[in-house]
Length: 325
Image (cartoon, rainbow, N blue to C red; front, side, top):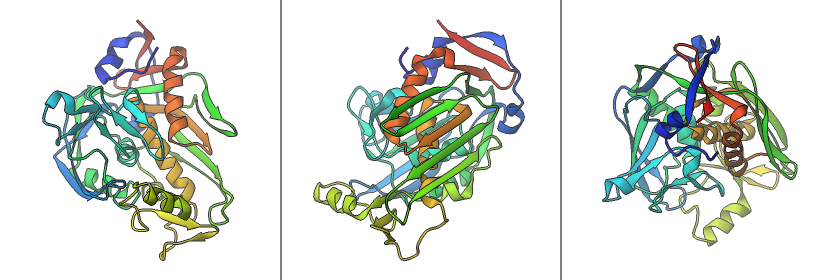
């Protein structure tokens, strides 16, 4: 089975088979949510170096997260669902697109903010092919969502519950999803640079309290990578204003790090955003070792190919939705 291309397609592919009460429902919240009001934000596009404006708008239950390119004239061509079936590139970031060739890149930090704050449904209007990089973290996106506020929609929240392990890897790098009664993310990285080294970190998302260190953890790169991308006409908007830049064993940013484990905390932020491209919140444990966007996309596609590895659960009534039709 291929990954669903919309929330409606996901609902159509699976049918109810048995009840299953989950204690996590009380902590996660049982009703789908959306924004109370519009929220707007502008910033620089990482690759274009141009100003990008996006607006988050409320959406009906079972809409999911959907991007709308406002610079595309034909409405049908402007729609890009934020789902792993839409992923078209995973080099340095996660980029999604549609069959008309229109794309939105660097979606992972915004998706992490939506996942961490338990936003189920939103329309994201954007006037460019990439989400603004802002400060390189999810903090500005979290702030805009919190300012707009959330409201419940009175329709049961559906979540993906992992029933058996699913794992993908490349060399010594891997990531996996394993069963758990909570929503847990764990990551470990290992770099030769003395500024980074080996770090690990874990957090829970069940109660909707997004770890502030993870929220504010910035993307990072090596100085030679920045120089190479600039020569190739990429990352024109990248600087120490929106990334941690490492040269050998030295952090180039004058202000230093925001937290002792900011590097691995950002890797967790990316994982949370990438995995929210499954379309629903997760009940299970993510583990990643030296993982990144490409493996995260492989993991989601592997999950949807093993329909006995997961089930969809209505949290409001405990109804389990399973069994591919």
